[in-house]
Amino acid sequence: MKRNNFTPKFLILSIFFVNFQVIVFSEIMLLTGCKNLNNSFIKNEYILDFEKSLMTRSYVYDSKTYKKLKQTDLSIKKENVLERFLYVDKDLIFTDKVGYPQFYTQLLFKKNNPMINIKTVINGEEAISKISTCSKVEVFEKES
Image 1 (cartoon, one colour):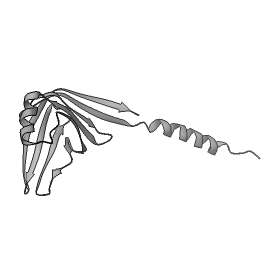
Image 2 (image 1 turned 90 degrees about the vertical axis):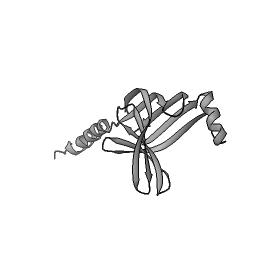
Image 3 (image 1 turned 180 degrees about the vertical axis):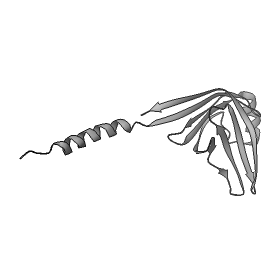
């Protein structure tokens, strides 16, 4: 009697092909040289990692700005790294909400756009303002 070798071969081939199709493409958007409208920085950059849904902001205040901010807030650090969760809604990228339900703020990005906006909501009234413009925007595709 002839044995059916189709099933084991099919199983091995399907596992082989599935492993090659599990390649995940993710993007990282890097915004560097960001100039703030209110404060000046030695370094101010944003890294948006869409795979991890995470925004990382690294900044270093210049001496003048640091002294000005330190007068009103003793917890200010000259250099700091902030992390916020991200979510994407159509072509807009939002950070998580900071504040209370009646009053909160979020950073607002657009893909490949050097402008960074802040969305402020007070008692259901929404306003969007420009806070920073970056000199360089790079989008990297990461393959894993």
